[in-house]
Amino acid sequence: MADYSGGSETHEVVVNVTKDTPKTVERSDSFVSVPFLQKLIAEVVGTYFLIFAGCAAVVVNKNNDKVVTLPGIAIVWGLVVTVLVYSVGHISGAHFNPAVTIAFASTKRFPLTQVPAYVAAQLLGGTLASGTLKLLFMGKHDQFSGTLPTGTDLQAFVFEFIITFLLMFVISGVATDNRAIGELAGIAIGSTILLNVIIGGPVTGASMNPVRSLGPAFVHSEYRGIWIFILAPILGAVAGAWVYNIIRYTDKPLREITKSASFLKGRTGATK
Image 1 (cartoon, rainbow, N blue to C red):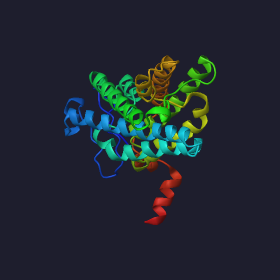
Image 2 (cartoon, rainbow, N blue to C red):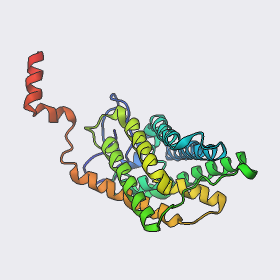
Image 3 (cartoon, helix red, strand yellow):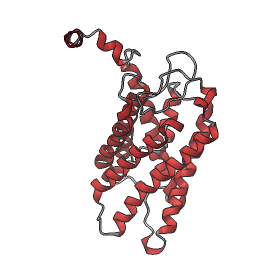
Image 4 (cartoon, rainbow, N blue to C red):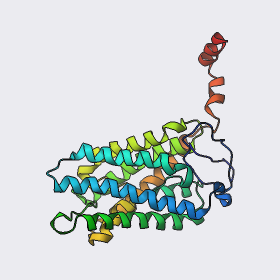
């Protein structure tokens, strides 16, 4: 879940996976009592391990007769996102993705002035991770772990748009709506990543993240179709965030909504 308010001020989205954390409104300039530098370090470290683990699964799979398999690669991506959300979500919001950061900023749930620093931190983490893998698998074992369209550019663009839309739609639901079950945020986001990689991996590599594609592209100097993996995820994430905002019909917490439900009231009365 996330701390946010419905006012005109800009607020930062922070994934909250504990029930006991007060759902109070924090001003963006307070950084939720955590120095901004620590947030950036969390984004660098989180993005590093996200790209390292996910891309390592791709490289190991290529070098070892497809031993990891597509479902295995999807599980790695899903698991690493899950554990990182629970690890640093309460510090930086666990974006690890410029498309997510920009989407939150577009809906005024993240300070616009902090977007460049967050994107730079994410890009640094992704590039360092890709460079680490290149050093570890030098020579004939050096495999390109980036994303390339297997069909037409239009097909790849639409596919990336759709799967990133779904990802951001889920993130918006579990990270910005105080009616969601905060403890399940990491599982919901990780499961969405897993699902998207299984269906999108063979088509586009299932990037959903400009940094996931740019890191390996920088290290391997492979930029074929890179515009797709920058533009489509950003547009898909912004669309996903805005569509969730449209269907967010109330900001009331779950306990207030259930009070008005007659069948729940009946059950509550029966237990007294």
